[in-house]
Image 1 (cartoon, helix red, strand yellow):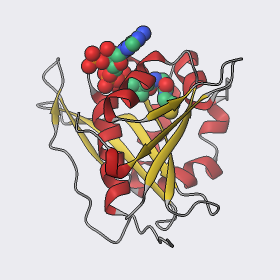
Image 2 (spheres, helix red, strand yellow):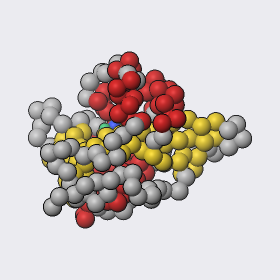
Image 3 (cartoon, helix red, strand yellow):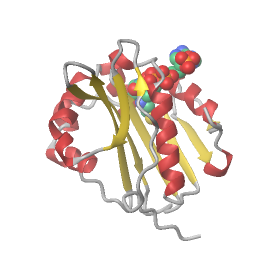
Image 4 (cartoon, helix red, strand yellow):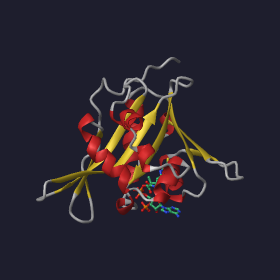
Amino acid sequence: MAVSPAFATKPPRLPEPLPLPDGSWAQIRPVRPEDRAALIAFHRSLSNKTVYLRYFSPVSVQWRTSPKRLAEELYADPEHHCTLVIERRAGGSGLRHLIGVGRLVVPNTAPDTADFAMAIRDDFQGMGLGTALLGALIEQARQAGLRAITAEILAENRSMLEICRRFGFELAFSGGGDPVEARLELSNAHSV
Ligand SMILES: CC(C)(COP(=O)(O)OP(=O)(O)OC[C@H]1O[C@@H](n2cnc3c(N)ncnc32)[C@H](O)[C@@H]1OP(=O)(O)O)[C@@H](O)C(=O)NCCC(=O)NCCS
């Protein structure tokens, strides 16, 4: 079945803002061109461990914030890419910054499937945001008419594997240090 995903042509169905333990709020929304400075700050904030788990190698902050990489995240080709961010809003102070970024990429070779990847800022991990962001990416993929989403995940990445398990992903472990192949047929997705 030929599918032409159009992430930008439908109004996105997004979750309600999530309360954080410190009284601030986290809103998942599509990235916007004016997020450039906030996206650079997000990339600068990530620990080496988070960078390694996300990119499988210790890629530098210079590479992650290069004009080419930022353009890929900020000005996604709506036929093939979707970037969602998590914006944290702290009540009285008017502070807004990015604490999570997740992407879907539809390869030319498999136009009914998207690869996903995501990262949550270290000091906001373990608060349910990764689960919420993956849920929102699954919903985006469903709205775009895709059949499945996939990811390669390092075998040591216990929290990402656990989140995938809860949504109903099939996980193929091949061992020997190879990443785990995760795949979710969207018709089989669980609610989490
Ligand atoms: C992986 C990542 C996105 C998860 O986001 P998060 O906001 O920390 O995740 P959540 O808080 O929604 O959920 C984490 C769940 O994993 C579980 N978990 C954490 N460590 C675990 C472990 N060692 N074994 C099993 N489960 C574990 C937790 O129990 C938690 O679930 P619960 O609190 O609901 O019980 C985030 O930690 C991250 O950015 N990591 C670095 C980058 C990365 O790994 N990206 C993924 C590449 S695709």
